[in-house]
Amino acid sequence: MSIPVLHGAPYSVYVRIARLAFEEKGVAYELRPVDIFAAGGPPPGYERLQPFGRIPALEHGDFRLYETDAIVRYLDEAFPGPALSPEAPRERARMTQVMRILDNYGYPSLVWGVFVREAGSEADRDPVRLAAAIEPARRCLAVLEELLAGPFFLGERLSLADLHAAPMLTYLALAPTGRRLLEARPGLSAWLTRMAGRPSLAATRFPAEG
Image (cartoon, rainbow, N blue to C red; front, side):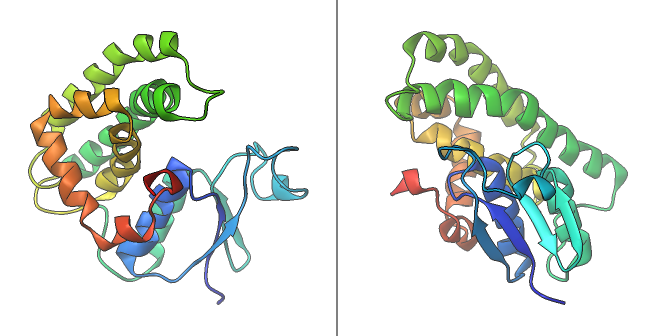
């Protein structure tokens, strides 16, 4: 079977989450560029892979899949390499809880609310929206630090929860306000430093990281 093809852009949080899963599993893949913010939107025909026009989307032979959560769980179960999901029900539930917190509360406040509104493009910067995002971002970071159970979110073992969190907190740390918010959470700051040292993070750097 041909190697998996991941459609998306290097700037995307959710594309990076999927790429991190590939890297941590040691699975070869092709990243095929799709820029949803380009003039005219996604390329013609992309709706056959993702009818909502978002990224990423996955092709693996004749199998097509979208939604990042589905993609990373498929990668974890379909390929050899280190397991990224625990077997114990409570640990799996905790992993999913962290991922949903990040999707529902982290991404809007940490990425769009702080990073984009302070350190994004000139057109996206907005001090009013930035100010409104600070308290939700602070609350989200407090909850995440409380759930951090050791070197990784589930304790001693890396999981999909860590891969979900790393791109969002990486963007947050690129904004001055985000750095200050993280400095108030030494546990999360130490976690992010550990994650930044992993080869998977180095191999999938955002363009904004330089």
